[in-house]
Length: 407
Image (cartoon, rainbow, N blue to C red):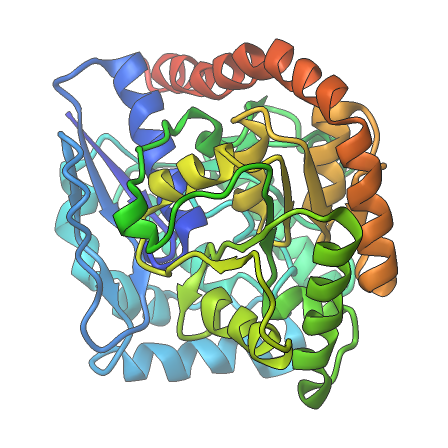
């Protein structure tokens, strides 16, 4: 039996990788070892990444979007920008997805994965994902939106109407990862076959990392820090100011807490490379002891191992925070979308460990870090108590999916 994963990004985005790894764990738990999972993700490089993760039963068939996908890309941009609305386009649907037609027909269902594909978090409408879903439906197969945050779309009423209709009437089921999405869907009359389950990445297991892979011995009592260009953009930091902005936070964090700081990338795509981005901050610092740069070469499971060993994790990337939460590490979320608030309310019942982008600077970061360090023992105890619930919730999605598909 084969299940197809569509809509995801490449493994250079470790959040996309964590979703795949966790999803395979969830599906195998529900369907057993005979299951075959094919990851047909989008990859925008001329030579798509073909991961060698060694996961039994998982194969990769990345859909290249360049250079042969130039037509697809141009059509997609037109669809994304004309009138800022969603325009159903069957021609685009077929051109864009023809390379996976055989995979769709060989699969019992397609899971539309990627976490926040059906939102406006990155400034564009989800036409590509909408049309890919409809392509699968055209082939007579079920589409399930998997591990998602959805909406809001109200900034474009026409787009909202099309998306709500798709979610209400066309997809087989929607598995959502936080309660804000459930509330949003319910407000728009979408509740049938909507299921809650923690993000699939909560099911991903860590993979041990050696000091040789890091290039240094893991420091004790460290603070992990993950910054991305998205959070800087949301904070309104100009390109010429970014290096100094990060350097100020690094210096204050190191000097105020007296702890080593580890810069931990989680996305290394050419459109948003955390490692390259954070090096600008490191370069703007005068040489400082006890600031470590984790290399950009680890996989998602290895980054989870590194994150599990810090005393506090401060992260912009959602799946870097999930790696921390699921490892019992006190975590500060640097929000660039509603996901951060939703996830914190889900886990803690409040959002007091979230810093909004308009309030992100050296002082607020250090104040929050001191608070989380002071409350660290209580936070760890709380997360350790809840960790089995996180994993059980993520794993429950497989059980619901099996029942839905009557398999």
